[in-house]
Amino acid sequence: MHFLVVPRKHIATLDDLQEEDKPLAGHILYTAQRLARERGCEEGFRVVMNCRELAGQSVFHIHMHVLGQRRMAWPPG
Image (cartoon, rainbow, N blue to C red; front, side, top):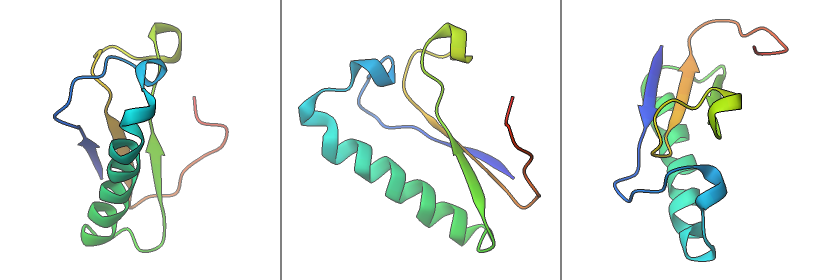
């Protein structure tokens, strides 16, 4: 399983978060957890956010990847 959590407010990268965005950041994390559980990931899931090109960010609007329903390897990438 793989889905995205994308806020409506435009913020280009994690580096662009401001103090006023703290409630939004918490809401994104809570939403990822809630949706992962609703989609059957009670045994675990991974949350990924890339910040800037070197880390693999290709869409410059913050978003969270949620992956689950399979065993994850470490290190990722």
